[in-house]
Amino acid sequence: MLKHTVLAAALAAAFGAPMHAQAENDRDLAQLRDEIRQMKQDYEARIQTLEKRLQAAEAQAAQAQASAPAPAQSATAAAANANAFNPEVSLILGGTYANLKQDPNQFRIQGFVPGGEDIGPGARSFNLGESELTLRANVDPQFAGQLTFALAPDNSVGVEEAFFRTRGLSNGINLKGGRFLSAIGYLNSQHAHAWDFVDAPLAYQAFFGGQYKPDGVQLTWLAPTERFVELGVEAGNGAAFPGSDRNKNGVGSSALFAHVGDDIGDSASWRLGASLLHTGASERSFDDGGVNNAFSGHSNTWIVDAIYKWAPNGNATQTNFKLQGEYFRRRESGRLTSDTQGQALAGAYASAQSGWYLQGVYQFRPLWRVGLRYDKLYSGTPEFGAGLDGASFPRLASYNPSRGTVMLDYSPSEFSRFRLQFARDKSRPDATDSQIFLQYIMSLGAHGAHTF
Image 1 (cartoon, rainbow, N blue to C red):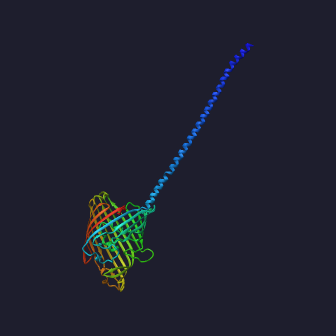
Image 2: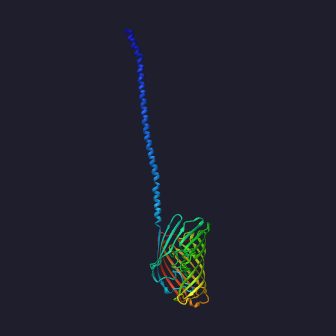
Image 3: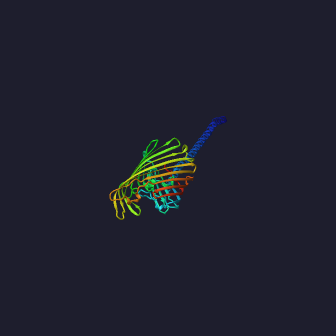
């Protein structure tokens, strides 16, 4: 019996120990598997958390990027809108001191029907001169606008120019509408402060009464060539001198002009022009020795202009030279009425008149220029029809006015200029006027470039 018990214990010890070890191994493996599974779950949870944070960060960045240009665009648009209501403003201040030998109230251009507002040397002594206030801005991508007030010394305000213009239509075509300085001739399209002398040439005073400024439209075409070629046409109401208000529909005046120009090497350039103005007048009145007369009929004016500019290698800051001249010829025909407020004698009238000027301006050193101008007019012999006596129109008696002018100006900067000018004026046969002017011109604010 004892032998069986010992044997059983030995067998149990021999086979029971390995089975216990196997069980422990199984528990260890299970525990490892649980730990690994737990770790996997933890990592998956952390990865998901990180992925969510990344997606949130990317979404915020995308939202910020998407929203960032909007404020900038709004700011740009706001600035543009602000500029639209904040146009360029420029102001020209001008004044003169005039010493005139003859009474300016007696000034006349003998042989020519007077008209317009800018005739004669102006008043004696100190004068404010005409100031200009200009507002200019782009309306939209298609149009721009400009308004220029003329502030006269008598405290009156007039509209010098008020127009819109297109900003580069296709094929070199541009359109302007409103009141503007006509492009006929050369000097006509320039404001007075850009002139090289205090006053306008006699031809402009006799044929346009200063400058021709129609209310109407202007269409120009710039040829796509290396040489400058410009053609233009204008249509207006015809109210400006030498026309007059005729209280009619349709086109009251028309003008054609052509300009051609080019360079000569690196130092010189030129431009030639030809223009025609056709207009009409109805009871265009004028005073002749206290008697009021009136003209009704057609008026045609031809102009040929030329200008040559020289500057060494195109640099005009040190020294430069400019030579310009224009020739005018006007024919008028119609009916002339003498003493409209009395006898009212009327008859046919026709005239053919001409005139020209030539001027040269030389900048001999920086800031200093000297200029010389000569004017000449030919009144011709007017033709009076039956019922009219030429002696009743002493102001239209034949005479050839002339004037010689010399000037010296000093420009401390491009915004300021002082000018001394002397002229011997023979606009009428009974007197020669010696005229001395001292002029200042000040430019304030943004000012557009002047034409060639």
